[in-house]
Image 1 (tube, rainbow, N blue to C red):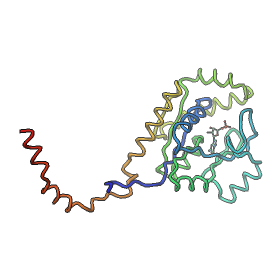
Image 2 (cartoon, rainbow, N blue to C red; image 1 turned 60 degrees about the vertical axis):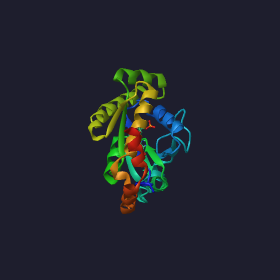
Image 3 (cartoon, protein in one colour; image 1 turned 90 degrees about the horizontal axis):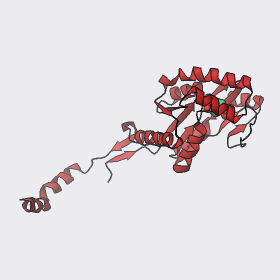
Length: 226
Ligand code: 5GP
């Protein structure tokens, strides 16, 4: 019998990061390599961007529909980001975690704070680009935002950087494969936490100790060493 029985419940991992930190790429790699890991799909009221896939990148809904969902208490958390609503569906996450899946939420700092308050075992990881210069290069190359939107994203990025101390881990995404490795190591460590133990079972202790005393092979090996 195994000494330790661990909880079946999966881990909840939040990955936040400043704009163009490369969270998306890192998460894609993590999902490819770890089959127990799933990325939760959020709801948003923002419009579809180039490269977005409906019901995969987000569930895209109208502002009215989103507000109806807020009223119906369907979100674990939600936030207004750059003028649009974003929210994590509560029921879906609960089902995945009870099923033993490890769930990633790719959400921003306000949402991360709310989830951590509601579910303190949540692991908060902040992904950072190596420098703001690098972020500027990446956002210009992406070419999907206006200058005004870019300025807003940078203002938010500076505010978010101030929130890093509230996170459990920070990962700099200079080389994707190395950032992925760091996050995988975090996930492995989290699985070894003692608060993930459901039961320690030493029920056959007396019997085991008795057999140990009677064990003959120790005598033989002792002789061999001599
Ligand atoms: P984007 O529009 O670039 O896809 O996302 C903008 C921001 O919204 C990102 O920082 C992203 O992490 C965050 N976000 C995405 N989904 C959610 C969500 O369900 N809740 C919260 N609080 N933020 C989210």
